[in-house]
Length: 206
Image (cartoon, rainbow, N blue to C red; front, side):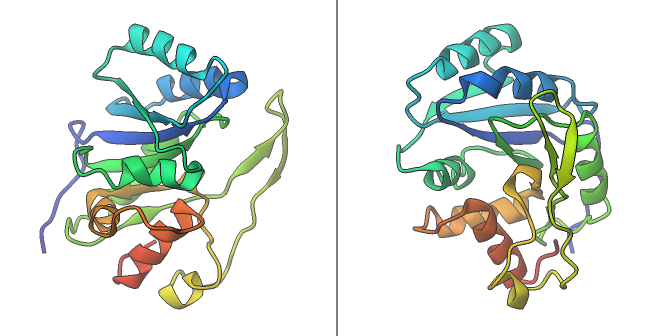
């Protein structure tokens, strides 16, 4: 067993995919900048936006720097393949990884909570996946509901018929990302369910 304890040098790589998301994108980027866990970088894959999405990303890149925000261009095969195009890329390295939707707003402790959980799982060889419930809000961020709270065991058997993990809440370690790299982009319907299946399928923990 290879053990590891989280330090401030452990970087979270945020994997965001965009497509015509200009209306809400700035709100999400600002919430990322406000994270209490500050050692992160953002890799964005735009899938051919025709609105101001790329211009907004470029403006933030000028403000944050290219080391903090990397902009790529996706395969134009839909959101799932766009996410897989960056999450399966072995050149994107870090200690932890977080899927990120363009139209969310993150709570400021999101990454801190996820990293604290993952720090209790020190075996570097085991895939670990953190996930939580989604808070549904109106445009003024007023809460009106939560995603379902599933009680079934987080096992491969259950993962075959039901995904309890929303990609927008997922944070995972490098061993989990390695599974995606090994398989490469697959013709699946959902990148987050696919990761959930892979992690549970090899005996990892969710």
